[in-house]
Image (cartoon, rainbow, N blue to C red; front, side, top):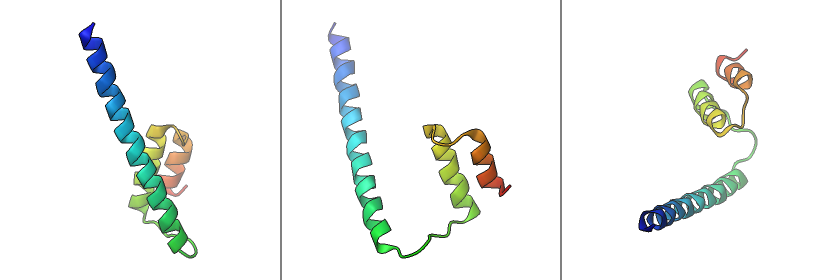
Length: 72
């Protein structure tokens, strides 16, 4: 089952790269948050973008996303 090993290797490699990217973004976010004083104001488009991604990640229920994007 050579193909199974190859698939496992590629999957592992992709997972490692995604973990490293996540680690970088978390560190970058932490640094930037430390430099910002007060609240960060987001435009409606920025809020909608973040809500869409959060929903795909399963972090927001659909109702919360619609409230955030429509302002209800």
